[in-house]
Structure formats: structure tokens, C-alpha cells
Image (tube, rainbow, N blue to C red; front, side):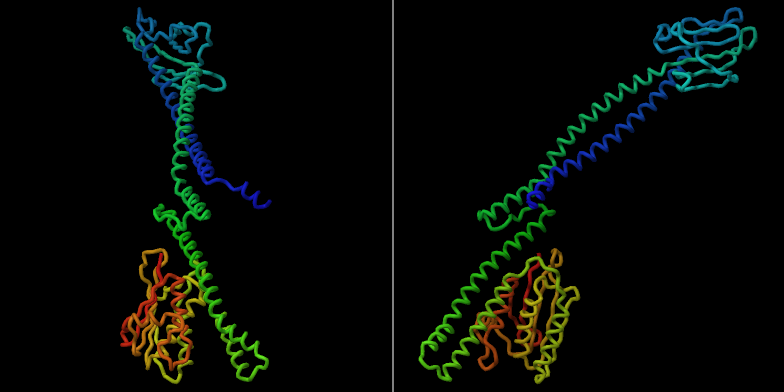
Length: 455
């Protein structure tokens, strides 16, 4: 039940993407709409003042002087002749006063007393629902008389409200249409963008059904680390299963002879001292075989994705141990490696692989052993590691070295050992997909190179 509830709570990546895109889009278009609406409203207000000023100039152009008195002829703007047009104009001059025909039945505009040559502008307020513009000037008559004149014009506020409201309706209708279109395009882009993930899901399902063994390699660079690691895990799992089967087969095969010896001992009526020794040897061999095969199986079950393991301290520990083991040979043991050299795997595997190779070098070297490590292919996410063990011993050809990698093969029958060291090295290297090569070292003996691949 908890797992089912967790599955119900899990949100789709596509749904999250669309939700995030919708929120960003709506916020962005909403802010754009508000900014455009305010900008348009400010432009309309500036335009209204320009209209008012234009009306004042029309009235001024319509003034005629007759016998030293001023009067206004018909103004060209037809809106000043229509009642309820919302456009008004007037002239105040002692004793003459004129108002446009549109002002009939309307309240008179409240114009303050102005100084000559000054202009007055008043937007709508709580006491007035009009935009008002006035200009105080001095009219010089033909008789050299100066008459103070105030020309005013006004426009009802509903002109501004109606114009802005119409723009607002059109603006938000268009923005809503654009938002819908963009959301559809975002949904299409999200669907296209999620196709590689859907493809990964389908291929994993095919792997679960046994229809394929790995993912394709042609994924986008953003998914490449994921698919590469998944392929590495799948390859490791398949290799581990195969090695477990091989290990179990080897274990069964290796235990046949010791078990047969024990069975024959038990069938005898009396067990002699020699038989007891043979039985103990068979039991010891059984223990050794089981331990060896179990260790190999554990090595095969290594983790593909592991934390980087600095190898310099490990090699240093191995060299210190070899100095004690081969103290009678007075070997010159040295190492040189990049400080950033790391092994991606189990520490036990590296210690066993490097330990066997260094032990063999010390065993067959008369005086010098050198261990080095460098990172190669640094442009990969995990650089490849090249580990080299050199000695000044008799050396080996690549063919002879490959023969010694087989279980039970020994290069020197007089030396102690069971011929398993290099076989263990080969199995560990194979488990990590590393290559093993033998060549002539700079010290004149054998150089064993182990190259762990990067990816």
C-alpha cells in the first residue's frame, strides 16, 4: 500500500514541465499586458491634452473683432456642435463670454483666475469628471486696447475610459490567444524533448522482457552519462551472472577429486595414518578451492559505479609489505604516480591485483622493482588508469605471459606457490574490462601494464 500511494503521488516530468512553462508564460504575458496597458493609458492621456490644446487653437482661430469687441464664429470641430459629445470649449472675456453648443445643459467648467500668458491643465478629480485645459492671453484690438481673454476646452472622462477599455479588451484577448498558442507549442516542445526519456523507458522495458541486452548509444549528450552508466551496470550484471555460473561450475568440478578421495577413505574398514593424511589434504584442498571460487565470485559482483579510490597510499602499503617479505634480497622498491590517480572499484580487488603483480616482480627480480601509474584519456568523465609494474628480472614474452594467466600455470616450478596469482589478476582485470600486456621494462626485465578503461 505505501508503494502504491507513492506511485500515485509521483508527478510526470511532462506535467511538471508544462506547469512550470504555464506559470512562467502567464506571469510573463501578464506583466507584459499590465505594462502595455499602463503605457497605452499614459499615451491616451497625453493625446487628450493635445486634443484639448488643438481645440483651444481652433477657438482662437475663430475669434473675430468687431468694433473693439470679440466674438467667436463657428468652430470647425463638429463635436463642439453636438450635445452630449463629451467635447466642450468656451471663451471668457469681459464682458463677452462664449460656450460651444455641446455645452448646453452641462455644468460650466471651473477655471481658476490665471495670469496672462499662462496655461492650465487639470485631469479628472473627485470634484470634476473632466479633463480641462485653459490658456490666458491678452488680445490687442485694432484700437490698441488690450483685452484679457481666457480660452478653455474640456473632454469628459468617459472618452479616456472607453478608449482604454477597448484597448484593454483587445489586448487581453490577443494575449490570451498568444498564451494558448505558446502553451500548445510548449506542450509540443515538451513532448519532443521527452522522447529520448520515453525511448530509454521503452528500451529498459524491452531489457526486462529479454528482448534486448543494452541501451542504444545515440542518445543526447545530456542523457549520455545516464545511458552509459546503465549500460555499464547491465554489462556488469551480465558478467557477474556469467562468472557466478562459471565459479559454481569450477567449484563443483574442483571438489570432485577431493570428495572422491574422502569417499574412498570412508569405505575402508580401517583408516591408516597415511589415509588420514590424505583425508586432511583433501579437506584442506576443499577449503582452498571454496575460498578461491568464492573470492572470484565476489570479485565478479563488483560495483560498477564506485567512489574513486586513491591508489598511491595503497601501492605504498604494498611496497612496505614487500620490503619485509623480501628483506633478505635487499630490493630497491620505488614508485612514481600522478597524485590524482584513482581506481574506481573495490579496494580488495585493487590490492589483490597489484599485490600479486608486485609480489611476482619482487620474487623474480634480483634487485629493482618500480611501480608507476598515470591517468590517460583525461577528456572522459572517468579518466583511464594505466598501472605499470617493472623489474630487472629475466622478463617474459607476451605469449608466455598469457599462458601464465591461466589457472594453475607456473613460470618456475621451484618457487613457492600454486600458480593462482596471475590467474586471479587476469580474472580481476577481466571483471573491470582492463587489458593486461607484457613488454620489456626500462629496467631491462618484465613490464606488466594494466589499463583500466575510462568512460
